[in-house]
Image (cartoon, rainbow, N blue to C red; front, side, top):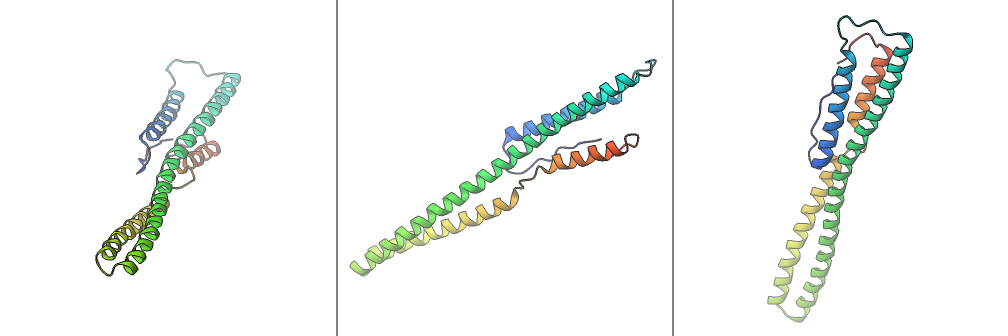
Length: 168
């Protein structure tokens, strides 16, 4: 079974390191178990059962660690997208504030203060639109499912069905 790391864009660096560490541990454990020294006697049935249960326990633990690392990375993406939406809400508030000021100035003074307030309002409207579009794009980038963990679980299930046939 071969595993590769896929760097996600926008993920926190610590989460990427966690994911890479878990994948390295998975690969090391698989290679370590596959190597058999020449001249070594065939293991007994009890030893084989013990190895299988140890391998299964280790595999399950490593899959859980991988899922945690992936969910941590996806949570960071979700947090950034939520921050963009928060910025859009603030910008929307500023649009309403400056539109109100614009109306007040337009009624009280015919020209100068009203035009100034209208220009500031237009700038806030553009900023709010940009933040909303960026936030919407970022929410489409993250996936709540730990895709790499799901893929390795599928590989594990395939291997369990046919343990003598190499996969990948």
